Image (tube, rainbow, N blue to C red; front, top):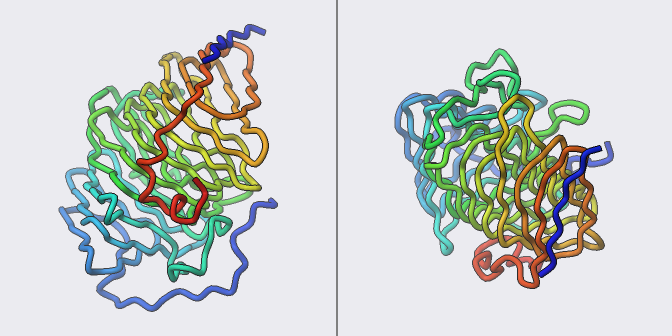
Length: 335
């Protein structure tokens, strides 16, 4: 094990052009707009999301194991996405045998692959945990500023937005504008009582998973063939990634992009038991006075901006790959 302490003072990604046609759905299976009371999505139904589906404060969306959710694409800020607003909850508890799958309406099961990106928006979870921004409460990227459900941040370290477990997010990251895409999974100010466990993001046009502040802990996360960064951390994220894998595609940018605070508060991130898989060399970038600890196995080119204080440990054994046998990446031979 080799230890390095870094302390420094000083549109060609396109949506798929394949001839693909959405599968027909029945009107009762189409969901759109605000969810204001408790709702359950059942595994014997294929759901179709159209536009923003927003779980509002005091409402809970429960999703049964094995449920398939398909999303229409939409245009720009109207791109389809599932948003868990502050005070809302999601209880999506899949299993390794019956994961919950979010994908595009164009996905018929075998016609798309990891290079099909940006076919819908993604999943956004917003909480009341602290962030380091110019204001204690900020507005998440990807949601128009006049939509009140885009707020995130606060002072509740233990905030609870529910459970996301054994969930596969595929072909998301819709283009909102020039250089502005949605992430597969966006976590803004999400608190430590929220459970994020066994998550796969495949073929996302922008970042796979991005955390804006917050204190949530994520276990067993895998990102495959993202267009930008596999894992992106911003605004003094203070949680933990444990057992994570980045599998880069031909157009991927960074395996890890770690940004520091945007406001006055500082916090340390932690990333444990990682594996970086690349066609050549994984890119890792520590920016803007980022501070924390990361350990991984893999060949990486590390760039650290001035003011960065990050401890990096190289592992001879990285993530426990066996726990990802349920994923599409494993079934397609990417692991």
